[in-house]
Length: 135
Image (cartoon, rainbow, N blue to C red):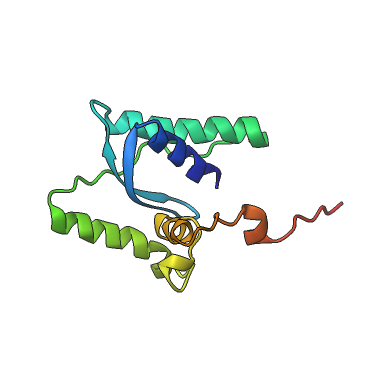
């Protein structure tokens, strides 16, 4: 949910537009249009750096989070856009994390459905159950 918040803040600031995204356990997919003269490297620094900073500040996590670099695919036309969007949407289904994309809480499809229904996304607590302290 923290990474989703970082994405939302950057979209609200006009840094980029997100057409689709999904956050997987060990990677993420973004389908985005960059604003003005922003480079992809700058956009990824905003995302990765913003998330890492907040993770340290808000949760005290001191370890490494991200691998160096990222993979980039340029969208060439409408068909390519639709194919990549569908790949992203179906990624959690293909990985066995949900039966449908609408059930996977860490993606654009789920959040858009929640918003359309006038609901707020579930918190991490409601997804994972209550926290237990074990001595």
